[in-house]
Image 1 (cartoon, one colour):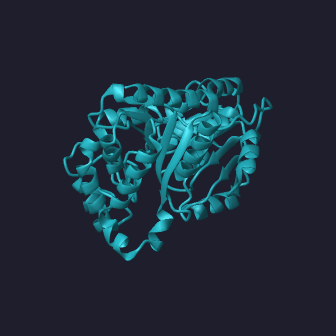
Image 2: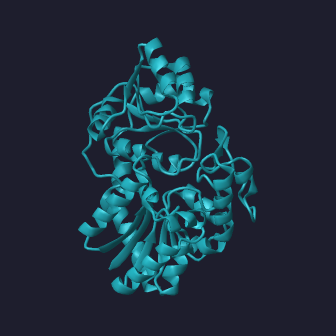
Image 3: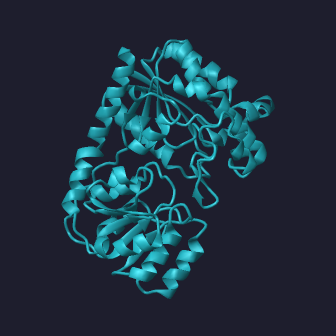
Length: 379
């Protein structure tokens, strides 16, 4: 089996879990004996592009000529069984699907966000869930509200791309939806159920900690959509033990003030992987307070692997990840406050570990991915 992995890497100035996920997937596939041929561009390249290519950048999300030439040459040379697309923007463009199909190579795409129908890919605007563009032949609300990078001009380009490639997405041979919530999103676009496979991401198994911890842990970007403000307000009503917070972002000062004012809030700043793991095992449960339709917060899988249950909001992919290994609540202060004492008390450690072993280990997830490749290559 030979697979081309096509991915537009996010800029190094914009830390991206998606880049890490793609790198991990390439390594796992290679270790499993799959021949992987990377076809990757990086947004870091934009500043060094020749003037002629920079002039074409405004249309590259719709059609990126250099990427199509290079992909066609790669396919003719390597003769892959499958092209696996991740993020196509801005230097690859969804046109790579057409290029692969023209050369009789099937295409699989992992859907990491909602950008088939939403310019910013989040279904979130001005502090609330927003689906104003869903179902529109041309997603003009994205332009009206400058949804892409805060720019009307760039939003117009992305909106035009979404309109131009509606049919392109429907031609993809198989979509990999990270959760059932992503699968439902694809169905709203007219994509058939037989074109969708649910396959989450995985994380390595670092072992199970059966020792109880104390209090709750929040890990994530300190921003409105991640629900840190909601969590702090809920904690002020129902504090039980200690709330530890890891992360950085625009609401950092709010978190620092809360930690300075209250002895039961401990702000740990940014942490490396070892620090995150240690903090996870020191807590009784993880709390994910997202107020947007978060596709797949990997921190939940990390918590489950360590035997820690999760208190999460009932949005996006969170319910699928948590399953019976935690508690799900409406994204309101009242609902979160009511659930905090139960989560902080601990328990469900073995349920959390079992859920990880059955659904999210590298072996389980990789087997599903290779199964998708085999399905489309046989077709």
